[in-house]
Image (cartoon, rainbow, N blue to C red; front, top):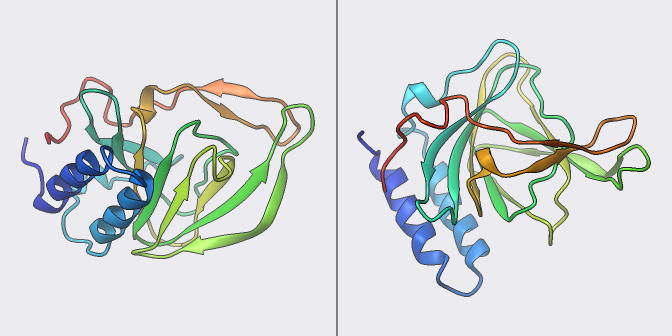
Amino acid sequence: MYTPDPLMRFIAAVHDALDQPAAHETVAAALARLVARDDWLPPAYAQPHPEHYQQYLLHADPSARFSIVSFVWGPGQATPIHDHGVWGAVGVLRGAEYSQAYTADGATPPRSIGDRHMLLPGMVERVGPELGDIHKVSNAVADAVSVSIHVYGTDIGHHPRHVYPAEGGIKPFISGYANGSDTPVFAG
């Protein structure tokens, strides 16, 4: 399968960064360069679902050190309050996203932390246990699709994570991918 040049360069940059100090900051900077232009993502990886957001696997490192996915948000779509359990970076490619941080202990309802903020095209936000890892993300555009590119320090579609229901508690989940775990992805 053909891999777009900007994505190929990003895959190489992530591989190089993981062997260096401050790897996650370097990955976030490389992601900012990737999402600075919106002319490389094939349409198949930007297709919305009418009822819920989609997560498409773009690349999975053979050693499971990282994965790259596109998130596609239809109007009004949002994640539940969730965590990642690993480092990550989110870059908006088109449209806009709201991100709201939360604190949750599982015994009481989750509580929002600070104000919800908006990420616009080209903006990158880091996530991970050391940064505050619980949040809710939603499409900030009322009448259009938004797309963001995410990189995580594992194969995120197969990584056990948690959802924090509004009434309290913790529910485990594994997200999977809209394009299926056996579907060929971009090489790198």
